[in-house]
Image (cartoon, rainbow, N blue to C red):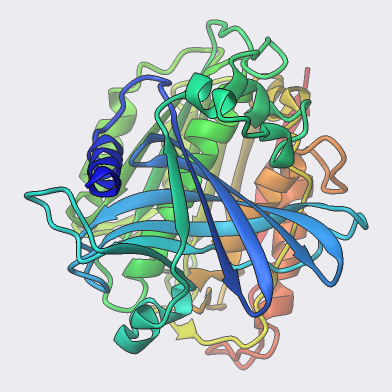
Length: 433
């Protein structure tokens, strides 16, 4: 009876949406393929969940990290409560080799009952197997302990240092020892982020929805908490993926002369045979809108910085294609965000850039549902913010590395003109104060 009571309390607390920086903790462990995994989940709200996994592989201690979101009765497991992990990376390896692939786990409560907030048991499963009922039934069951707050976690003797370095910004955030090096004081400058994605598209919608989620977390959490500016994120998806919604949103932002505006579009696009612009037009729900026209519109507000990027085809109209790839590119970087690099890009940069994922006559491709440009750009932007990253902390450096990777991943895919691969490019200048 006591076990059932604890589990019931655990689920009830996790289902509460936290609106402050309150955090609870869950430690769970399991064994798979001869490896013992120990995970610490830091739960702040249903869309802000951090997971660190401690494990030893081939005699080498490693730490993996990923973000998760809570999904109640998802389509792939309608009777379960699922914690969906994504964008995993190895952040520490005792042999200093962090270039190891780690697939984020799905933690789920099997046979979840919404009325009683109870379930039969907990399991972990790889994303590739979540849709397989047999795989879910045979997935490793986990041992789980719940801590309502930091004091209870520490009183149990649990060591956070098994999962975080003491200098880690996340450790400081969890332990409540954050300083301006982790959460800088906010100045008058604002960073307005507008993410537009055709999430209703039959073939690309799911991948675009995931990318919008990843970018929202990157800007709203990683960049937001390390920037001297106040960061706000607006996502226009589904039926709101329209020209009128974009214009209305920008008009209501109250953009100041010291503000930065970042706009990203992920969806279908095309150019015309007349080639009025080297940049393509976004295929929105109501009407097409030129990427360069949008850039001009944003710059008319005279912000300190304007960055416009688009992941869309730049050819005469054709449905954007999704290609399965057996060679996904993975990157792993240390998990030490450097606020100086964040502020260099977002509060000290001045000027404007417009970027597109492909040149005139080329298609932009999605690999395994993820845009070849968007996926690489997101990871390079985040990677450039780490303290010992080799990715240049400059907008042009990030874009050039992204173009190179996107082309490498699409170089065997043929365009309408017979050329192969997508070659992104940008126009504009950004200086750093």
